[in-house]
Image (cartoon, rainbow, N blue to C red):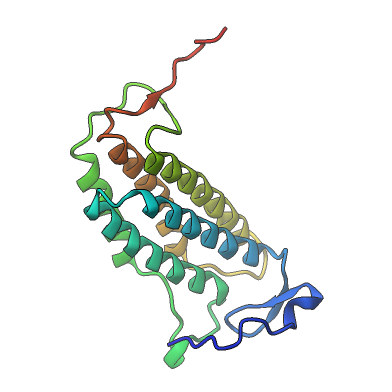
Length: 192
């Protein structure tokens, strides 16, 4: 269990922050940017949930995703040599990825196939889900960049989770738009 009884420590005043391993890195470090962008995705889902009161099933899914995103952040903030609570490194699992895939399949089964690209928008929940999707994709790109850095290690499952999550957020946005009926479709060349 994490206990935060003191919010400011002043240790970041020099432009560094601590990883889960205790190692200090610059606040613009790629690893910090990656898990910071995962946190942005999570915060955007908090906004989405302001608009899902009428869809309890989706809200429950999003609540679980928010919790799982903290697992992803913990995974990214502790290079594989670090240990978490109880001496075990917290890492995203294949079971979490499988669960996201199941949610995609369940939601997508009730939605008509796409015949055009979708413009982000529609309902408030869908618009925020599209924002979460694009933030999630940015986090994914940063994770891939981190993986390619010499001396850095990243759990492949963390990357897989974020890849699947962005797909889920797309399907969830369609679900929130009347199961696709209220999607805003792109009309190629419409304004030429």
